[in-house]
Length: 576
Image 1 (cartoon, rainbow, N blue to C red):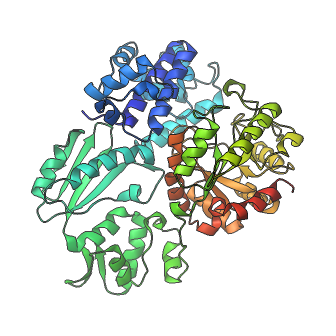
Image 2 (tube, rainbow, N blue to C red; image 1 turned 120 degrees about the horizontal axis):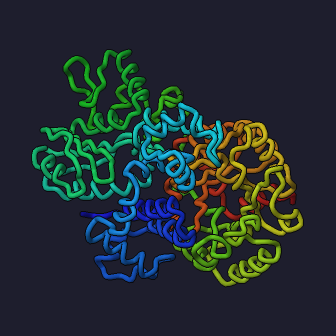
Image 3 (cartoon, one colour; image 1 turned 120 degrees about the vertical axis):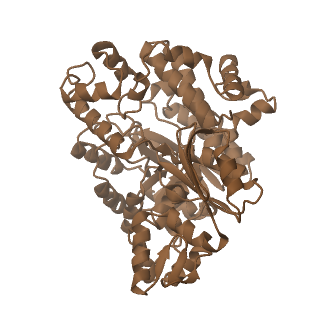
């Protein structure tokens, strides 16, 4: 069975979680978590490396034991160590870990004190008020658990866009090689660039659907066949993702792509425009009565109802129809517009690569500048930088800038915003840098008013360039903290500082709504990777997708500027 990086990462994460519940050595647990992140962010499939006989131990944090487990997973699709660990717990315990806010330590308490081993038992205990008195919980946590269970029930299982991409790209590559297959396109929320997807909708053009459908249901990653029809089939992959495949005629391809890309609300709005013109718009084409008018391309479908082409990322019935009719559609930012990345880490704090390695990797990707923004000293466990370490790093950056051509390295810091709104380094130290990124890494559960004031006070410090990952959310894992972000965006406009769109696929923070709000307020958004290693530099693709969903144009994004244009903007935020 083919095993993707996402599968291997999930195995290492589950091993770490179960070891954590058992109370095992924290260093061993951390090794598995670090390995999970290394695997997830790797730019190549591990199975290809195994098949090529490459030395996996050259990967950051992968030693003999982990390398052996990777080989076992690639060759057998299973992990003996995980199987043994699972046997020590009831099967439902791992389901508890999928509830946001329930990490291994809390699950250990629930299992140990209340013998809770399923979501049904968890919900019952919360409704009966049995959880609030457990150590580390409380009444609010109990209510949050109930709310999270309800949300999970309402939305079903969802997958990060980056995880879904792994399986979608492998499956489309398989389908493209089939005899008779024409164009193969993933539609749905995946094509619209949603942060998470529930399933995958794939269209294939072909004159004969039978062989395509037979090959689809026989795909070696299929765990369950839900339907096997003449023009439509549905399966569930081993990863848990449902995939619906439709074979369409070439003349209906554009209409089908428009219909199955959605959103439903957008499609309804387009159909209403068609009805006003006595047209019928559906997945087969655009018709007047029985007469076929259009449908080969999406552009033709839109033109039939009097609209220009609307990019998939905007199709949410959030004003795009009106903007298209009035000629106000944004000229959306593209990956090629970005000149650099203003948030990344090195091995001076918790990064995996050296300053030189990060700079050279960025240059290879065509960047003209980067900002090195290691953590401030409050995060002692990861070796945050104090004033002396920052000064030494500044010397190293100057030397490297003198040596390298074609890329400039800016001196920065990701400084902790403390509970009272102070910053984790003195103003005199911050003043020596090119930019200062402020981040919240603690006290996530402050009341909304207090959390908001905390950020506003930080932004008012003399040296403050950008607010990083503004809501603190981790998709499918941690809810945003309570924060009046509209007020913060307005304050950023007044202060003249910037807001980050963190491109890591687990964050994608800002969401599309707040991107639009920043645009309307005149606040420049910086699309950054927050990379902790070279492979994560490629996460900019997800940040661009999110920016496009937020209607951002090249002019709305800070790091589309040339270095010459950027420097005075950064200097102004630093009080220069």
